[in-house]
Length: 440
Image 1 (tube, one colour):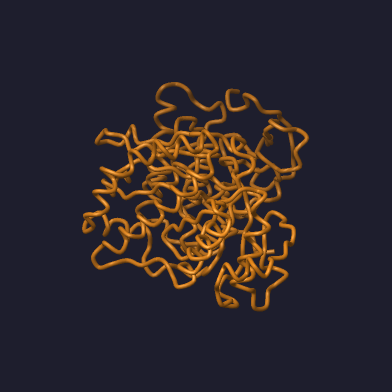
Image 2: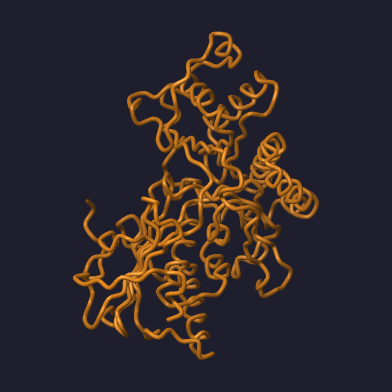
């Protein structure tokens, strides 16, 4: 059974949605000593399949717009880093059954419109690839009718539509999950890209490039890994959550308006990004934080300059966002070098890159400038950070009046892997009836 290559197999019973014959539980064994669940797949012969997997979100440090909105093709190549699933993740369960009467999808417990064009594009593409696989005779020995409907449930553990790349993580997780359910083993860049362009980068761990490509049909517009998650173990990422509210202007609509109206965006794509991509790749490969940090901030600034160059102008940053920029530059000036670097996606929340030994001091600086109002014990989430006092000299150098409550909380994380399949058979988001389980 080709699907089982590289896996260990257990035969189980008592799992839901089992109308006939045996269930096979497949788990990865890349790291048998790890306590972190990684892989599960239930297979019921000719009747039902369900899979639960998770992806983490990604952060772009060289971004761009789209030249073809239907095929979701970019006007330039781009780079991002995938964050660790222990801190930020999207979890998705997909189930296919002959008993389902229609495709349905739930996001964070709320049913969404399954006819949404990008979601339909994903479903059509994954089913096309499944049909192609069968037409070549490379058929799954546990056949599944492609006429069966699918139920999908997805949950983010970070704010959705708030400029934290939730759509990219969600569509990457969806594409990966559906591919496993339908037995598709080809490159999934096009499937994920149809949902959210940058989702193709979330299919890989570590540092990932989305290649612009040149073909009109987009077949060469794919993601490739520049460096694995283990490449730069000292690198840390701090998410400074300013607002968890949904953006007034979505990133897709905003970027399309920028492509249509911003001369700066076109100049950037043609004259700036190619050299910047090469330089950023070098910084990553050589673990050059000085170069990496400065280039990351410059690219973020230029991205938001194109937003202001758009007509009507788009402003994703808030006053608190700009105060964070000020804090980062004051911090670096005090140390005489680039020790922290900010980037902002299409939203007010800041992503700060730094190295492990700088985290305690910068977190202390953030807490000094943006002290929590009432959630002091929950202000810092994710990786543990040891408390560090700031000297009076350093506080004076920061030269800011503290603004309590401006930052809701901080998530400390690091570079992480690509999609993982979970191995807990009771952890599916869908219940035995194919509907979302009640919230715990």
